[in-house]
Amino acid sequence: MKKLAVGSAVLAVLVIGLTIVLAKGGSSFPAESEIAQAPVANEVVSNTVSKPAIPKAEGPGMLAMEQAAKAKKYLFAFFWKNEDDRTAAMRKVFEAAAGKVADRAQTIVVKVTDPADAGIVQEFGLDRAPMPLALAISSGGAVTGGFPTEFKEEDLLNAFASPALENCLAALQNGKLVFLCVQNASTSSNDDALKGVNEFKADSRYGSATEIVMLDPKDSAEASFLSDLKIDPKTNVAVTTFLVPPGSPIAQYDGATTKDELISALQKAATSCGPGGCGPGGCGPG
Image (cartoon, rainbow, N blue to C red):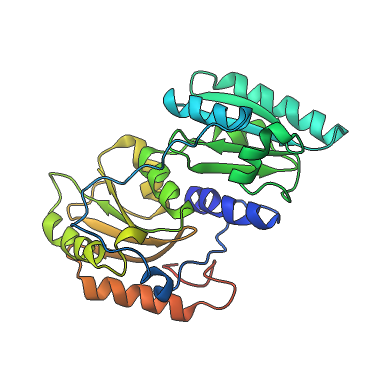
């Protein structure tokens, strides 16, 4: 769960200005009572996740996000506050890494105290974040890597995520529940696996707070993500993983799902977590 935990924890940590914990969980998710307030879902979910809207350009940083999204590239953003030795050193590392992936990522350097860039600072809650800081932001708006104070070139070079992981992170970072549905034409129980998921999504209590992400287990681009989830890419049966913000898997099913068991899994996860939320050793499969 390394990549999922890293990317999904980033925004929650930045907002409160604490150290970003890489490769660890530390999750909390909406209580069922909060989810129940979501607007009514008008129809059964389609098999594609909704994408976040491209942010409105407000200053150079937000404009850079918009341009990267339109170009279907990542945005590597370097944030700094004080001109000191560490900032200078990390900027060199950032620029070296960015130069190696210029075909896949655009870049922006932002001084967090510059009023012109208040938009992107507010977007990611960076006013109290540790500096310097590098973020890797997918074209869909998901933060797939966050590296405060010190980082290496390989940290940024390894920050790219697969399409399904990007979709999961985008939804989780928007505070939504996610069903990752792993199936293709060769897997059995596809309709039965989606039955409970679609009924859960169609429930007025959960509809707008839920996203469904489809993943073909034969897609080589998703091999690392499947490995993190301990799902065999050669599976002959549909597999469904239930994820809650910021990235904890609370249940996994082979074959058929039912709405009642999905609701039960959510309730169990919510009641078994302490005030600190669900982290390693807490909710979710070990």
